[in-house]
Length: 401
Figure 1 (cartoon, rainbow, N blue to C red):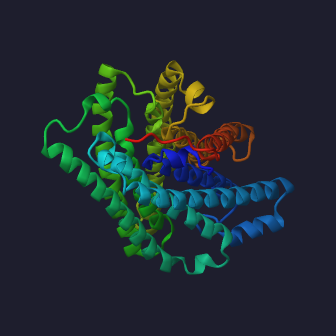
Figure 2: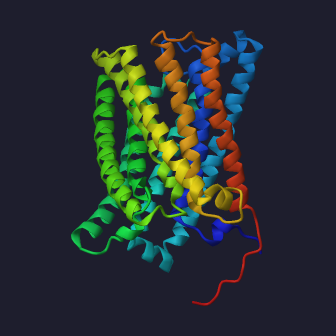
Figure 3: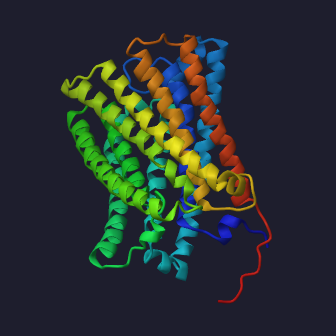
């Protein structure tokens, strides 16, 4: 009977497979977001895409075709992986391994599930914008449903966090500080900020003041909780790493700050657009430029830190190009995706909007090429990891316990 390494050694971290695929769908949406005119709307929809196809140049048509194909492929992979994970997670909950996980530091890896659910909702919304004609005419009716969906996902995440913190903070000695030597404990923050950015989406697109207000306030609450948790987990984890070194299999978590910053930045820009369009709140293009520049600066610092440690540990040689496998390897996908997305925002909403560079000029395409390079590197990484983890194999015998 054929199986796969992921099936034989399933852990909740495999939900990151779904998250990475969903993130890659977003990178293709950036083509449409910034290269296609969408007057009167904050995002392009099916009608804008078809209008650009009818009147655009050959190069624009090629970009549109690549973007739509990329979105379709990676949303499919996102949903396929989500369903696979939900099925395996249901089986995993019946095992002794699940009970042990709930009583260890690794309990926070359960937050990978709401993280993946939030990403899939975002991916489905993008799919609707791109492929469903006339969606914008009924979109106001969808925003309350979207808020309910993200609120439910956030509630699931908060309940899991409460279970974990209630256990470790109410009793002494149940949290293993020696195993806190990575940024794995930032996963709850990642789940909360993903829910927050989804909750902020209606603020950027709705014309109803009550929807915008709920969206802005709700996303602010979730974003603030994510930020506080991240700061506490970051400082305590760094202290543990200084004492015990970085756990080898958890090395990729050193890069988790990179997607956190991208998602936080998008949440802020969605809120800013809603406050400007609905409540006459104003921020300048230069303000946005500096905000994005600071975000990129933080990302570059943690990119340097993470790559330095991973290279010293030989992580890529062992877990990416070698025979070893770890579900945590999928944590490498999100940082590259996040850098690609934030670079696109930095170029278009920062440099171009502030008048620093000309749109579609030489400098524009040089920086955009860097973003696209990150994107395609992550595509290659996803297919490489999928072959390692999900490729069929004859399972080895399981010894009796």
